[in-house]
Length: 365
Ligand code: G6P
Image (cartoon, rainbow, N blue to C red; front, top):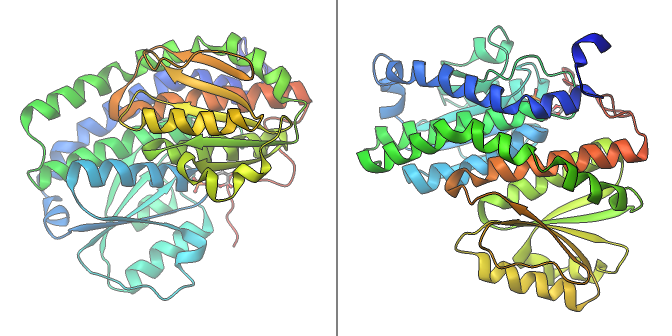
């Protein structure tokens, strides 16, 4: 098995570095089926005016990110539910809903059961974003966007997640088109960004040595906070999940504006605060959140886009991201957080590819 690791130490590292290829293949594969969506399957899209996303774990965070994209581009309301909760609560079904399940394996018992529950409530328009074309999930759904991550061995999902994000961004574009809410120029501009995404990811992967320097310090901590705002909030949640899954450091993701309502009480020099700082319309607000932490003696680790004017100083460490990538920026920012979790876990000597108590695919409830 070690033979197919090539130059990498673990499958997780290999899979992180496969992302330019995985995302590129996914985009190509789905773009090929998109015209079909406007043919025979168009009926599904014409008959829906809201979206319900069902998923677990990392796939759930892909769903949370997609909510920002779909609402912004297609102007359709999106609800995102943890599959194991949705199936057991009384919800309000609406037949004009596109039910979207997200699952790397396509076999997660809770997600399958949530899908069946939604169908039993009369919601028949179903689409899955799934990495396994032969899975139960694909069989149970009317439409499928197959991601082409390839086999993912590391229990903590990496290329599985970014390929889901790429697929979900295309879905947001497809929904926007079906509602005539995407003009040609915007469409071309977004497609250009998508096509260049594998290259942009490769540039971010080149930051690995800088992230490794941080990981050595991180490995000595027992708690960490991850801050993000807007569409980077789900990325902060995913960054925290990744770190706890494989390094066993307790980590929480928070929307930065919510700090003052609780987590600020935890800020001391013992609690590193990882901050995602894209150059977007929330930047100035985020900078004041950074100052709030700094003023209380917190230690910040900031992934800052170019031109954010966030500079390293005492207790503020900065890694500069190559560029701001607009609406697709969450995909780039998640890569650096994967590297941080990975190298922290390696420094702590944990079993990175097979963290204790966790399974790659949870096929029982
Ligand atoms: C397990 C895995 C996670 C994954 C989740 C959902 O908990 O350890 O990495 O995100 O299941 O899996 P799915 O295959 O449905 O995406």
